Amino acid sequence: MLEVQAHQQLKQLLHLEEMPWEHHLTLSRLIGRSLRRQDRTRIRLSAGERDRWWLGLLVPLCLQSQDCVLVLDERQRQRFLQVELPRLRQGGLRLACWSGSTAPPGSQLWLLSPAELVNVHRRRGFKRSHQLIIPEAESLAHHLRQAMELSIETQDWDRLRQAYPTAGPALLDLHERLSRQLFAASSRSTYDLPMPSSALVSLRDLIGLLGPAPEPWAELLTLQSSQWASWAHLDQNLLQWTWTLQPLEPLQQLHCLLEQHPWILLQTDGVSLERNRRTGERSTQSGAKVDIQLHDRIRTEPLRLFAPRRQPLPNTAIYAEHLLDQCRRLILGRRGLTLVLLDDRGLRQKLTTELAGEFGSRVIHQDTAPEVNGVICCSWSWWMEHQNQLPALDQLIVALLPVSSLEDPLTAARVESLKKLGKDWFRDLLLPEALAKLVPAVVPLRQSGGRLAILDGRVRGRSWGKQVLRALEPWSPLQRLLPD
Image (cartoon, rainbow, N blue to C red; front, side):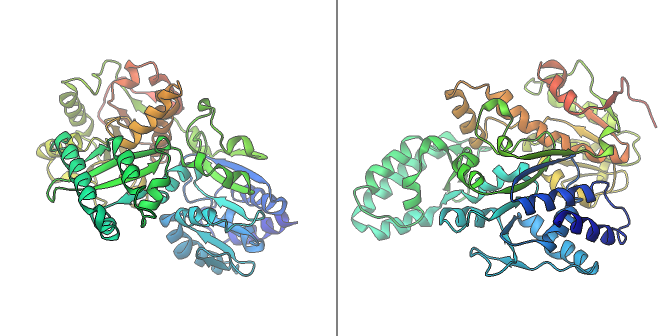
């Protein structure tokens, strides 16, 4: 059987590994079983096992890759081509790969990006026997949303006017009216604004009289505005703007893709593909025939957590001063690397400047070359992207929990959609997505034995803060700061 062959091949290959992962063999058997049975399998891994699953996935594919479609984002593709394929060849294994939007002619493994996945699905390029394999599936909705994004720039307006010269004055008037409306509503620090709901209606009324429209206008006119977020990105220097549209819930729009095909999903335990089950949405969770968890021992190591009970909330006037004061206390005397996490760009830059005035060149902003006892101020997304390029953490300071801001047009549109359905938009959307960022972000601390500090007063001052603390378990409280 395929499972036995994959098990034996992987055991031979693991002799070359210096630090084999404890779930390699189990994962390879599960993958082999799913490939043989062409079923739907969801495998949940511990947070932080970002790149340790490759061998367990690829060894069975070396033995059976007929009708297999591996969906990789750009980072994963680079890792696959530059690290994992040479690793397999070193162990005497070969894996034939086929890239592009047309199906392979033979039994090669078909590599697709999320954008190619959407395009092939739209033109019905998959056979029912094609099995989709999606690593890090918790990011699937994000990648699909970006792949389905529609962007309209200034030159697109020019091309539309060139296609229909008789409507040129009316199109120019509409564009100028929207420009005045957007820039009048913006402030110096505001770059993304929701598009007026009347914009799409006005365009449909105007272009509908002209006949077939060039791309991307033809696609724009087919969109259901209630299912898409629409906003403008402003260029204050050139006084120009770009119209961006993204689907609110891409998995809903592409649900038939996962309903019509067998699949294998690897995802972080506790993170749903789009959000938790309370939304009642159709999702892949209910479609899995095999649903299994592979927990890592490192998850049981308790975190040392400093989260004082009486801290100001982020929307209070004294919060910035409190944040600076607590960061000074936490950084003082530390001998290793400290990371300060917050997504508010203005507050992050101000905090970086003030800490640099206190601690000098030790403090840097989103840089992968810190001093031994350096301090890096960064966003959550930057940390998740670059954590493998940084030395072990001594301390991680959560200045602000990663709860998406309603000032973000996409978040605001998704929240508004849930409100219309009568859903609890915070607990069904913002909180699960915040926990999905928080849990993997603190895993390196369990490996290094470092300290976690949460300076966001909401973790103690809001009822939902208990869910944050439960997601971080196990942890041991630090009641006071003591020198090492």
